[in-house]
Image 1 (spheres, rainbow, N blue to C red):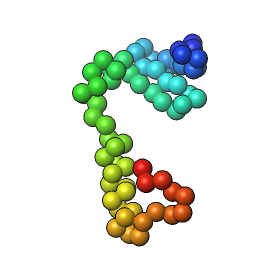
Image 2 (cartoon, one colour):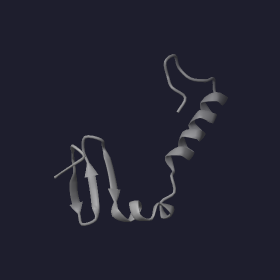
Image 3 (cartoon, one colour):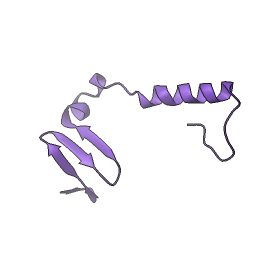
Image 4 (spheres, rainbow, N blue to C red):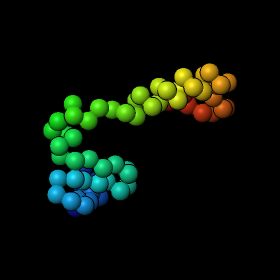
Length: 64
């Protein structure tokens, strides 16, 4: 199926996967985002802090 011009797969009822974006979401996570805290943001902040401690970023590398 296509949603907003993107190919979307439904591997199981209520679970959708956009292979072109490598994104998968469940209906529950859309309806109740508070049940699914963001972990990527925390990980990114930790990576930035660690890289700053061990000598910074490589040339051209974005700090996020």
